[in-house]
Image 1 (cartoon, rainbow, N blue to C red):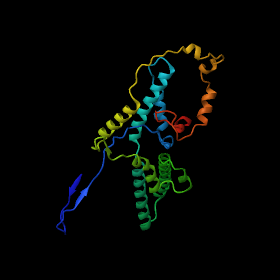
Image 2: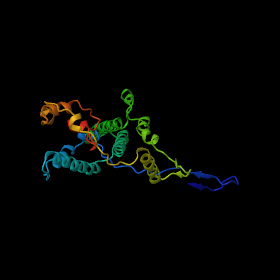
Image 3: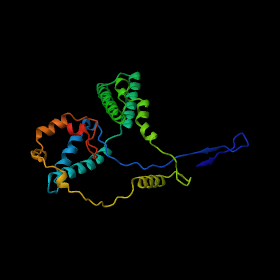
Image 4: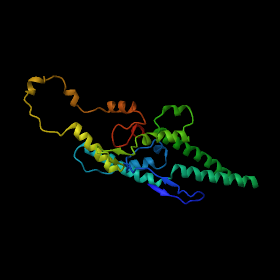
Length: 252
């Protein structure tokens, strides 16, 4: 998009060229590691998990409970304050208390309130460090400052790197919208991979595949000790499935 600007000094008309593309973002659920430390988290999880689910087998019950818990945590997340806004408001209150102390001695209630507010700011900063440490995949941030603008830029680097602004079709036509680029990729992979068809099997699989005895243990139920051992060695920042619940949620 080209936008003409006003001619302030020269007779030439300055123009601003804006090149951008709109890529829709999927609303994936991501469990944040600082949520278990926030007041009200355990009550929300317990109330959501104890509600009855209509299902026949345990797999459907677990899937329905996790889906409902994901919905309840999204709703609970909207009720808590944003970290940046909460930290900014606490710092403003601390500045006001410092200004009052410059004019007169603080009362005991004001002094206790400032002490509690400082502890709350440190707790919010720890929450923010956990947030950016999870979103940034670089491990060297553990040795230095964890909540800097450089870490924030590193965390968003993959999104900017994977952003394709323009594609060129086979007939030389530029494709800049998301739907056109998605259709071009789909057509290219479809031509490469081909179209699936029903094959004719002429082999006798019973003669090729030999039966093995003693495999009944593979279909047995999991024991509680085995599940506890897997959860114990699970990374806290990795989610074992597409539901978004990572190891921190399972361990807490």
